[in-house]
Structures are given as C-alpha cells and as structure tokens.
Length: 158
Image 1: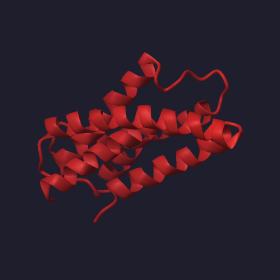
Image 2 (image 1 turned 90 degrees about the vertical axis):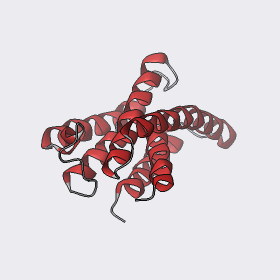
Image 3 (image 1 turned 30 degrees about the horizontal axis):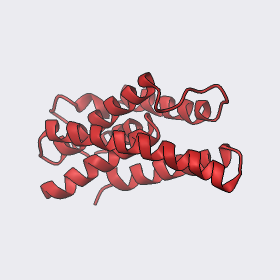
Image 4 (image 1 turned 180 degrees about the vertical axis):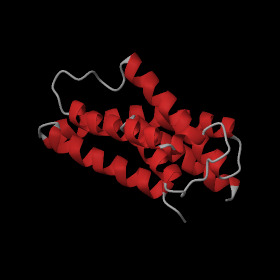
C-alpha cells in the first residue's frame, strides 16, 4: 500500500478515536482478526486476538451507552482526551504496520487525528445541538454511526 495513502488512513482512524475512543480499536481488532489487516508476527499481533476483539467490542458498546447518559464527562476532559489520543495512536500504528510502513509514524498520525476528532467532534456536536435546538441524543446517535461507518471504510479490505 502506498505510504501517503496509509498515512491518511492513520489520521482517519485517529479521527474516529477522537469521536468514539473504543470504536477505532474495536474495528481495527476485527480487521486484524478477520485478516483484512495483517498484524501476524508483529508486536501488535495481539490486536487480532479473540480477547482483543471481545474487549474492544464490549468497550465500544459500553461507550455508545455511556455517551448518552447525562452525567458522562466531556470528551475534552483530560482522562477522556488522553484515552482518545492513546487509542488513536495505537490504531494508527496498527494500520501503518499492517501496510509495511513505520508504526511510529502511524502512532503519531493516529494521535494527531485523535486530537482533531476530539476537538472537532466536540465542537460539531455542541453546535449542532444548539443550532438545531434538539436533544443531544439526536446528534449523538448519528455521530456514533459516522464513527462506525468511517472506521469500517478505513479498515475494510481494498
């Protein structure tokens, strides 16, 4: 896979992690598990394990539910923001490594994407709720679907 293309994918999966921290690793782990993204024999091979698929998938489902609760902390709060950067970095590293590119460059690009996704997603969601004068859930659910769809697009076989 061409380096520039995979670098864009690394930023993209980071953006997904910024929108939904657990969606990115859930779909990356499924992609590795299904053989769409080859991580066998690499330090990140664990991402394709059944345990990783289960943990990240349950985490993603839990995040979709938790995100809709009124007392959920903002994605820009330090612990949530840091988790998104870490997950974006991990997923960016996985996608670059699976394409024969530098895992370190992928980690940095994924982390940058996570910052973009976190801050951009926060601004988009809060502004849409205000401008459309709707309950948060009417923007949150489409945001879930965008994150899932974008992640699938980024990790699916070409």
